[in-house]
Length: 198
Image (cartoon, rainbow, N blue to C red):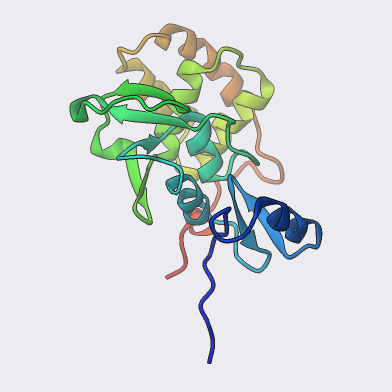
């Protein structure tokens, strides 16, 4: 008889010291605030599940948290970054870096029941909100565009139609994104690489 193990382990399963001990032993790896067995593939869906365990209500992962879920960052932000759709009139919880924005159907995607901004929307949010935007940030935005199968021109079009604060500054940041080259290939990433197995 086999027993099913959870995909993610946290403090409700084992004490934190024991979880970190299993990381040191090479049996687990960290996924945000949770842990997974080393033979569990590190996918956007798995990272979304780790974020989903933290979030109250119907918060949408955005900015740095969404970038981590999409795989363009190795670790999530210390404070989960989320968006509350203006139409839902949700409260901003403590411990979260929350913004309120109108979100359209093309702005979000559902990963195993967890709502995340799309790679293109995430790139736009980062370009609009990051206080510093250097080569590393431009490369991250380019990576998100590659996942979205989009170009800097697509992002420019989204920015041109945006009435959000920082849009003029964001347009000036596009040149850095156009110059950024993904390591290994100038081709767009294969979206199948980020898709959940059937």
